Image (cartoon, helix red, strand yellow):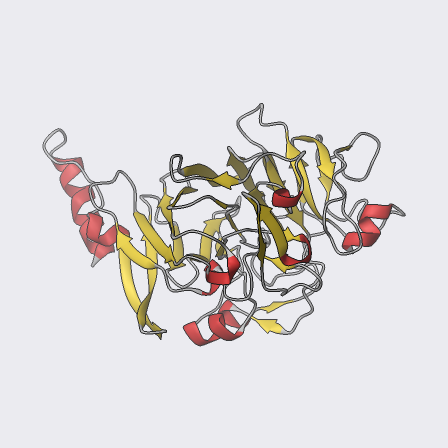
Length: 375
């Protein structure tokens, strides 16, 4: 029906220019299908289609990106992110594929932090630390969905109401993320988080990317550019030591493009501790594009644009082929990479890091863009 309507519209424009114009009907830009229910809440899959006909799919379970179908340099479209075909696989599978993670993304040392003279204790789910908000963090919740109207592009908002002390974090917190899919193949993620008492916040999206196509080989031949002059070294449990180390002369210098696999096996202390790259890069935040991934074989490009101070570059070091995702694709070792825009890991325990304090007086507002193109 959509294709037929576009054909009729095109004929009218050609035969009677100046009278008719073609704009996709909003109802065709976002379609909805049921995935089931989780803890009494309906879960939906939303398909967002832009004017190019390119598609992303998202779900309110974990506020997740499920699928990103974008063309290569020859116009061939394929999905370039990790996800699952059904709700049950999301519940039982990898906790983080494409999910929004919080209340505190990344790690907090030994599951403890102090705020306003009170020590808070969190669940340990990444021994001996807390990871990504704990085992029942925001990634494992059904968010409240809303398809937005009167927007220039297809857009969906997800909202999660976190009760006070859930997973050990103080405050009744309301988290919102708006996904917008533009005609320039940009996924815009606008975050807003509010609280009724002082707490900490670190929120990100944990999408995995393979620009060959999801489940199609590894990402070691992807070129990476990260505009970061320093990074935060970690200890053996992947907690930052507090040092801000220059990337100069190290395998962590991606200020000019390098293949992911070019130096990943170097004899360098941080690569050994992370089993590859699994580190927070301190972004320069000077130019528009903060990071870029390029696949020479397909021509696909992913650019990351953010207002956050850091990005976690992760090379799928813990993928092991036990997860079978969307379309029967197997997610093998280093078959996906992540660029998680964020504040720094363990910031509540690191006074030298940028503040992650969230207060009732000042909401957390942030925006990150994934922009896809070819060259």
